[in-house]
Picture (cartoon, chains in turn green, red):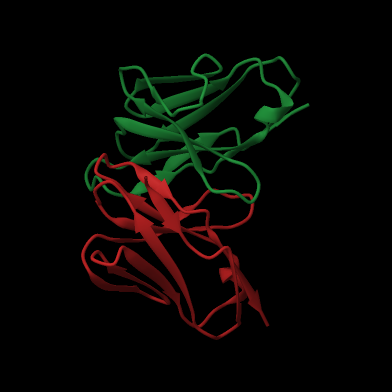
Length: 116
Length: 109
């Protein structure tokens, strides 16, 4: 199946700093990528849909100025958590829909963010 | 509104069979996905159903009934490594995945 690589897998940052998470599709071009957040023992929550070359579409309740998404190429989307606070500590996961099939969503490995 | 229901937790014995059910209500429908998620890891794709019926893939099978808004994941010959959460997700008319909360499957020796 298609491969999506997410980096870093773990990051610890100080409160008030910013953290950038990268999501790359390695063997296909992804015009659309998705960013999820998952708190312990809870389901995936879609944060935003990232579209190559245009602005991301954010879900209700997600602050677009805090969670900056950039999808500058067909193989890379980035999520920057700005001015991070301890409540932003979570598991962030990206996924991409492989365009040939158009149906399966492939996930990155996830990023465990801890804000101290 | 859109909704996915699946049991919170199930327990089964190694070597046995377990069926995890999922019911869904979505605005339009473009298929039903099952994912496996081990603790601390991202989900991995297991199956996709868009037509009624049973899809078999090794020890795992997935069933869909569109008229009933119902799917199940069947796991045979359970192994300890199958202990994980199993997520049901339905794709709506906008091709967006609507996620269930996941079913935590506990396998006992």
